Image (cartoon, rainbow, N blue to C red; front, side, top):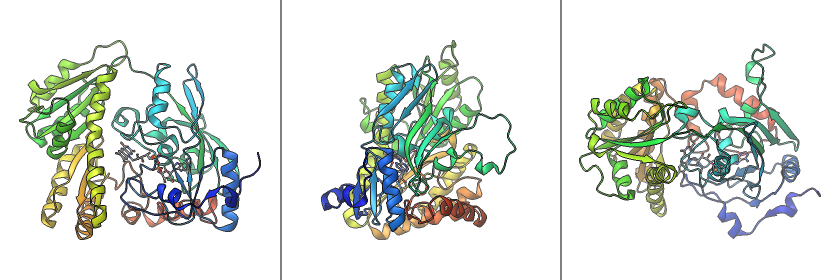
Length: 461
Ligand SMILES: Cc1cc2nc3c(=O)[nH]c(=O)nc-3n(C[C@H](O)[C@H](O)[C@H](O)COP(=O)(O)OP(=O)(O)OC[C@H]3O[C@@H](n4cnc5c(N)ncnc54)[C@H](O)[C@@H]3O)c2cc1C
């Protein structure tokens, strides 16, 4: 192919630039240009030229980032959406290779048609891409059982800032003492690097067999603390087999109720926990054991909703997705007033989640701000708190409360960002968790791979 040049392939039209200026963070940054390549070779040529003349390049997939990671007002946005081919699916080897612009939900359905499970499952799977999920190391409800995206990436093809294309495959060594561990597996450099170290142009995922049986249960509780105690009991029980343990507080329950086909569901409930039971092959789902566990923790067992079968489980997912989707909508309505949604993704050891949430709520009360809608991956000690800042002043007060909450999460052995990455919005909180030595090491890696600093400036570091 003829090498693309920045001059020939970058669109400068204002309408196009504005179409790539926002993600789910609430920030708006209009780039100087947009490139929409269709091959790895084209991307490599663009990067070589961008490095030579110092043009910033920020990758964009589905632009569902909650941290401003896929937008920039410097240089160009490189949209990978045009690279949307599934290259190979090998049911015997249980692998799938895809270009970065394929949507995760679509790729999952393609794999499922062959009896295989693509395990990464961000709630945003219908809107987020393979490249974005790899670059953010996306995770989701089912990561409780399967782990985050990282553990399913077998190999990557990456365009580096100098214009070279490299193919990286995870080593299959059982023992290895060669060199520093941080250099053993370069695939790990790029997973979770938020577009700062290279452009992912192809991904190979390992696949799992589709589970034989999945049963979803929405279990309501009259008291939030009972629901959180139930989550801890379920994690520690040997009788049940959860692949997710999701908590919804009173405010999240109110949104879910509106999205439910039976809106009056569990009228005495103050919280609910959604679980998916996936028994080992050949075993029946442990439904009696779940109900017993729930009853022991004070659940409203007469109101438990059971979801069985593909369409019913999809409906359960739709109801849960209504919570972040509604909060995004509420946040975007406040943008003209200087407000937005503020979303946390801190995590603590799961057994301390109840204690941590109580503290987080006290911080909000003391600051006089409206309590967050809180929901998410309680089985991993990882809720999302969604605040709505109605204006710029409230935004500052909410951010102060979030910062106080993050300090407490770190003190409990937790993290400031378990799922959505750092991007631009959370950069100031990275040093809370990482030592100066760790930050200097990351800066050194960034300098080595991107000496001109063109890739995703402002993300992470
Ligand atoms: C309603 C909602 C629910 C969400 N739920 C979850 C959830 O459950 N779990 C979760 O983990 N996240 C969730 N997210 C956040 C977001 O969907 C994920 O981070 C997702 O992985 C981003 O994918 P994307 O294609 O939209 O990437 P974008 O937002 O376009 O980009 C994200 C980052 O990836 C980089 N990038 C994109 N493509 C490439 C590439 N090919 N090469 C190198 N870098 C690249 C970008 O530069 C940016 O840094 C949610 C977001 C929303 C709005």
